[in-house]
Image (tube, rainbow over the protein chains, first blue to last red):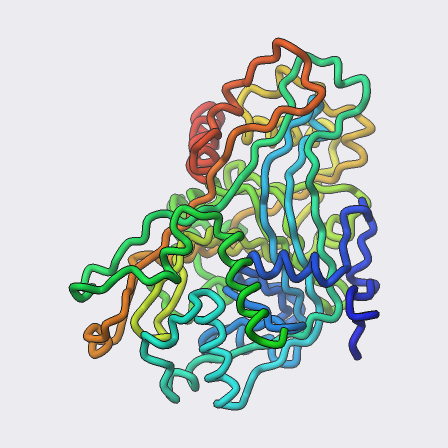
Length: 241
Length: 241
């Protein structure tokens, strides 16, 4: 079942229909994909013996599928194969200071995805996924490093979740106070947050004459979400997704 | 039941005992509290009809309790009272580029907390919690804004989770390659990430002669985790926690 209608939007479900402040909800693919592609970290929710677990981990998107990975021995990896998961991705973009306590808020972008996760079993497909993840973060880097060995691939589990049941939520636009409160002599506004990449820290054992590669330099001093999004756009232009 | 032994450490449980790379696990209160206090965003995991949900939301700590809040009408708020939750807090501190695909990693700090959440029912206690949250983010701000009305407090649910069953995980220290790979002519190192606060954006309807308050100026140009931690330290010095 694919709930993408007309190729442009995902269809709301009971789990993804936003009940409160529905004008913050977005179901169009462009909005969902832009938030995912600007991100590196997701929070995977799963259930073990009726109890919830939330594990933070790195992920990436290819077309209408997100992937993450982990040690085959980890609790999260053991628990998600064929199981219902909720994968949430969030950017905290700033603090909103209103003139009343009640209207203080935060600016954010988030995506929640639901569905049954599946483990990627085939070794060749795992090899492709491992390389794709490196390439997504560091375009061209696979050419200069040692690829994963069969044993390393066997110790690593890749998990896929198809993006069908999904909602993005965006809060932006600053302060919304009750009318009478605008007369209060309080400062109101937004403190914007950005996550930026600092100067790279070379490994202490770096061989001499190793230049800083472009796929590292591209991050330095930049907003991380912008670099990740830019990498994804170039990747998708080269590929089919 | 309080699983804090000798007042300094939390006791590992079946859910919080780290199985993989156990040297990354920390159970001491100082480590757990420092990660929580440097944070504003948590991911709340809960179960509805056997299915996991992960909702991002703002939180704060007081002593051995964390609090978050939301509209009384939200699905998350409806679902967590008296229910088992997992609350996860994560900082992504950087990318680790190794000489082999397999040893690529990320630097992070995270906390996972488990337990039964409870709703704060008493109106006076809710009023205190609302003020405490503002004070935690913006020391002194309550004096200059309109406090929450009874109706606003009734529309807001505050949720508490006692910190008993908890584990912190920290990955730091950069590249760890297999010995033979150190001879490869690849750049290796860390790209550090920091989340910083930019120039504040005043609300368009700001009254004239309103000065930027210190509790806003303290963020500007600074690492957000450092400001949050600093605010928490001052708060705890003033209070009992």
